[in-house]
Image (tube, rainbow, N blue to C red; front, side):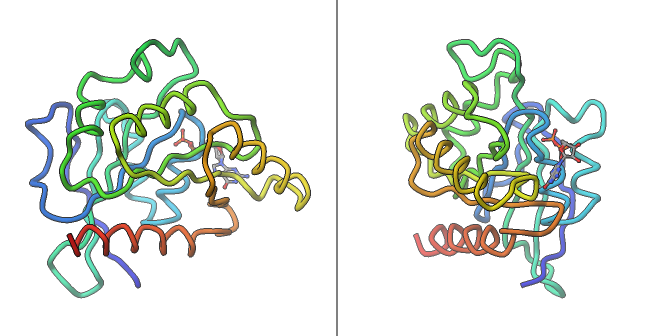
Length: 200
Ligand code: GDP
């Protein structure tokens, strides 16, 4: 399925979120994990550019996706601010704006959180904290390991197994924005979440 993507808005507070009308998919990850590149590969350069515009990096940037030729939106993608390497406090990240946690805990149409980790490095404290926190609020998530093209076959198997163990997940989808590896599977996962949400 080909989608047309349109930027909706950058929200800095809950009052600015778009109407909760279609299944939403949120993208989360540490700064530099490859989130912009992945969004770029999934929905096009414009989306990634918007999210990197100064002033929008601490906002939730919302995009709507519609099937080609149709006006009605089918999904919303929410690009969340990258969380830092810096101090991670009792909340997920001290640098995260205050409205992020309530968004993740309460947004009624949020069907899936795509949590990005770097396949080339071991699990980071912030990643572990984020997943634990999502579990504690009962939010569905899928963990996606980025930059898989940088690893040889053996390294990939080894790193993914170690990441799964450290993050406590059974499924880990390896992707590369550079080569397109895993993107079809990621679209399938996104589609399933949308179908489940629409069936409820
Ligand atoms: P963000 O901060 O999470 O948005 O990360 P970016 O998308 O800006 O990527 C951070 C760095 O990782 C950049 O230098 C990218 O070129 C590189 N990068 C991102 N995705 C990939 C990938 O799939 N393969 C490789 N080899 N490099 C990547």
